[in-house]
Image (tube, rainbow, N blue to C red; front, side, top):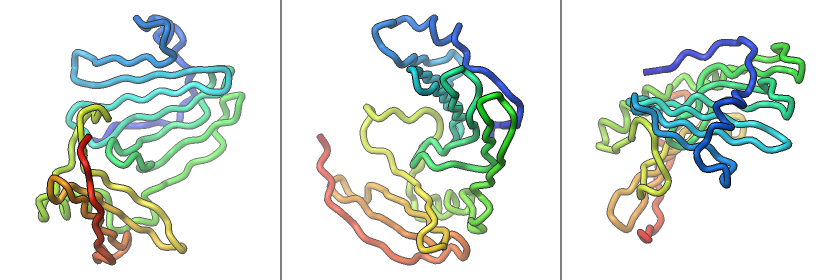
Length: 184
């Protein structure tokens, strides 16, 4: 399930944010009845909104200016936290000023990476992934030396994490390495 993100102006939902049950915490955290997980945060320099959808690999991410107007929005992967698809950026008055397609350099797509993981029995979780719930396999992507690169980190054994580096164009495995892991 890939959520739809549009290029329309919006404002930070101060009413929702101010209704948080724990006013001592700056962060609103809410498990929704439909299985989604909402986080909102705000201070004098920015506002932040993150909605992780049930049964999805994605989180809707929105960042706001101090005046409450949208600064940028798009999808993030809920594992590895990379930007997915088209992101929209706005000036402080709310005018759309930029669209960036973060998928464009990656012809070996996120969906291809998921198939790779399935083939190699690497579990990638859907839905809200909370840090306090133990190890979760992660997928990262980056542009290194002008080339798109995927990186998968998965718990191969209870004490060993394997890192697989994959070409973001061809899907070819470029390198594997590992490091020790101690479960606290």
